[in-house]
Length: 395
Image (cartoon, rainbow, N blue to C red):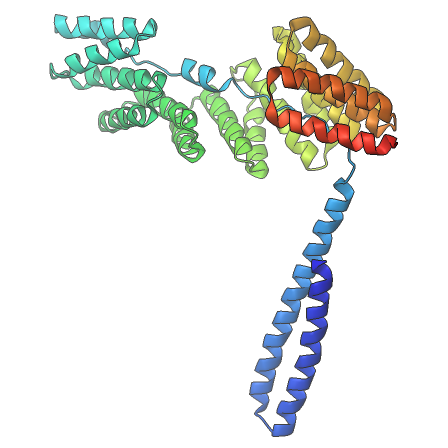
């Protein structure tokens, strides 16, 4: 529709342009004026042509997507709130050297309360300790501890404020060791607050610090975290750049679960860019790492994603095999969300293979599980798949 309207406008403008230029020539208007007028009209025509081309392309994409069987790609992320909070770092350097017995007692009790998840009690003790005019290093311990307690209480703005106070103090002291903890905690607090740009700034500060310290493992891990954040933002080119840079840093200590998740997520980017072979290479490496550490849940997730890659390559036999393996593992460990996703993916392979009746059965089994889990987005997704295969089956 829009393409037709734009085409009509192009023809009208072209005709009116010829009439206008002819009229100007008859009136004897200056040549410069006519040329300028022609350039403006030509620019308008070119602009409309570009718009028309884009509209046509978009309509073609939409036409191709109609009736397409779809499955679930699984991005492996570290469990959001719980995992982020577990990574917050306390700072206890120099605690043994605190001379004031009352201050030392308050610091120890505060740390103990925080360990026992008694965050309000820990904060009360920290405030009492601040009233004793602690030394700079002692104050750093308190500020970071208070930030960690506020983070656990979901008061992220207060936590970030404490971390920034600690950062200013650590910068004055040129204390790189404590700055590592502060920038890490800031990045985590910003993620908890869903401010990904703030988290990225903190990770870039941390990366700069690790380079200064020549800490290769720290650089590798930070590059990975930056890649994950860009992927969460949907900026695939930046995500792949930092994932690749992290994976290139060989010979450094690294959490194999993080590296495996990183490989899987980078594989999803390669798939979206039409590079299935590259995606498969990374997915197989991620699968081996998850199998090595015995992480069954993520092993099933990667098997599912390998199935989707083969499905896109048109190898439906292998795709079905990997989806079934994923389903077997998810069933064995009682992972209902995984089972529902696997059933959906099996249904999408069957649909793509033209077996609409069986595809419908698998979609319905998936829908039953998603309804049990009250997964609204997934329920809507599978219902659309069921409706589509019903139309293909016919009356």
